[in-house]
Image 1: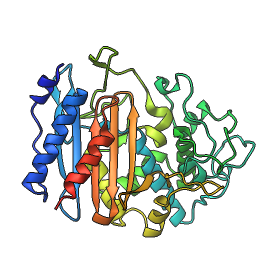
Image 2: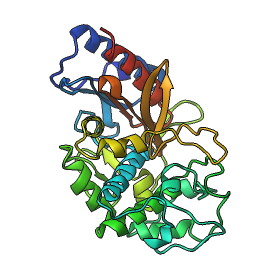
Image 3: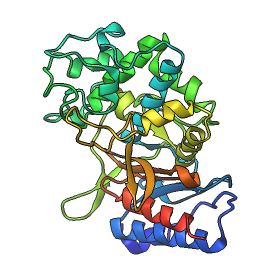
Image 4: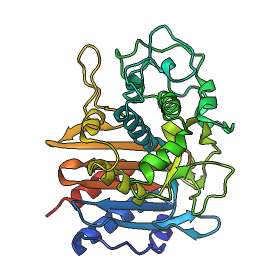
Length: 352
């Protein structure tokens, strides 16, 4: 499919917004440029600032083979944007006195003891020493019946470093954190997230990416071949990593989550301060990753954000708390530059 054809695809009508018509036109131009540049089959975006309504729109196809248009209601794999939800779920338990972030994980979950103790705080800040993927693990098609069962992939492996001494991004670390959340909550991990985070934020469409379930409006995923031709992405079953990268969502739902966080609907300001405090290693070096969020100052403005990428998807969510700005970008194509588009959206939305 050519870029020319992609640009001719009908766009879903945007929802009511308090952004100016000039801003909306600029957002639409940026989105269609991105689709043309990356040959994105389907793109869904959402943006909000201040207390205004959420603006959302979608272009292209959720399913190319069956000519199903993308819409703001299409659910995409959000990949690693799952991690902030796990962190929020943990902080709720901390507020309730049911989880100690600095206790060994074995206080809560069955997991082999390692050469050093590992805590939930270290898992959520990517300082635990738990490894990331190796070999072909990212392409796993095995189905795991539970979060606990998914730990089998890495449970026997030693830590790669002493916790707190290095930053090492690890989806498996978040899987273990999800297992801790599940045991501390006394209910399945996805149920805790749904009941205590999603529903209070007004989110009903988000759910685990279960390969066997019939999930309405689920987007198909694509990649570009080595010769630049669109093709179906590789098969993958994300049940081995629901807490670290296994949810489906709309862009609007991610913005609702962001606004609920910034508005104090989900966790207290004290918890949010912990999540958004830049991480530091034991020697004082910064990591720029808090608890489930990348955090840094960009041109003097604090930004919390997270990217996601896996088979058939590229995603990004960006928050600017000082202006209560939230941006979400979801594309059903690998390597689609979602972070670039999210940052451009942020610049447009904050223009006076």
